[in-house]
Length: 552
Image (cartoon, rainbow, N blue to C red; front, top):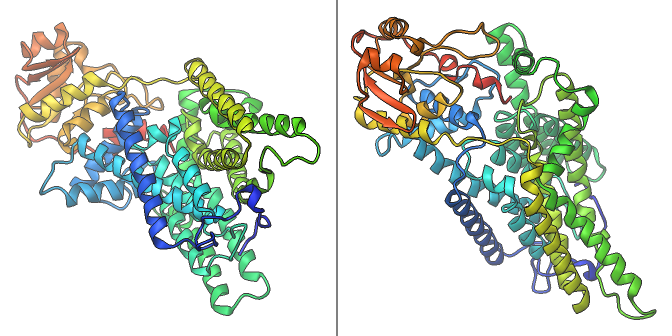
């Protein structure tokens, strides 16, 4: 279909072990199933380790997404948030919450179990993509194992956000159009699978949109190639149209629902300007994404440097006429050129969007996950080939160099990272306590200090009965918390018909409601002294309190 490189020789790893008894291009089902099982089990082990080390969320957006999915499960609607957030993750999680409702309540724990499972599915998609790109069984296995283990992939494999599945679907789509070095060209029907993957990806996050445009162009170019049958050309043309269906549908929906086809961009820009008016200069924004990639995953960038240096030193020290002490890796790297070019175009598009305030407001490295996955595949693949084909001395040197890279990464990573996150342990704990101690139909008034109240809502598991006491959307005028004094709290509780109060333990609340029924850290739960009328419905946007604009 689209051929990125000629076939490398056996010294570069070739396609040996990729399929036939001697290693053809098409893998037999049994070795493929074993490799896939190994990749998924390895990802499960990595995910379990991440959870054991205490990681729970990237940001408050993790909890916001759980809350909005819980709200969708209670009352499904086409556009779950009415904001800039794309709908597919809420459809999926909300549908799972509804489907599992007879067995499990839609709790934060269930959402995290779903995230764990989606991380395993993502690892499987990455492995399939690696097989399609390289055509080499061992190369794909080594790359997929590393792609499931580098820190951001590991963390996003258990976080309740869609970045890893979205990046894996994008990689799957790009790989569906790549002809591996040893051939044969992929069937045209594979492009349709890639296009369907892009429909899900582009309705989950915005960063796959440039990938969808490039995919459509690549599919149309492949369809126009001489020698294609009419059926194959029709499938490729259809794949191009399907790939663009997600963005087209979202733009059309915004036109119908909001009167502006690009309404979502305006919301993202207004939120970003409210959070950081002025922001960074144009040059800093242009290089924000590449800088974030290097800052957050330095080992992935240092490893190729180490490979090149060891290869150069080994070849320079080899005696004339002697066997090469290091395999030729340049030819083995060529299959990654085409997918890498797509990822580079994606980052360029994201950088331009950032200049125009239309990009995420935090953790920019999340949006570059497609490029990071590709880089991990290449590093794992080339490192395995190097160890396989190098002399014993070169292997020792390469092993030492990679250990140094790992040490440098572990040592400097805490100093490079700019953004850290409070796991909201107390907020989650009080939410769980409220879920246990209050009737399911009881309305609650929740104090909003910052976006940590989203963790409480997610742990509570019934956002339709919870009422944040104020909005802290930076685009709205500042509002004083009703929990600041007993009179304001009594009025606000009566307005929403709250039966219970949930906030920080402080005199203003104790003066009104007495001792708390339960405390977790600085937070407490009280029975409201009055105002148990029927509450007004809480909208998805009011539940998110502005956080739904933090990550387009």
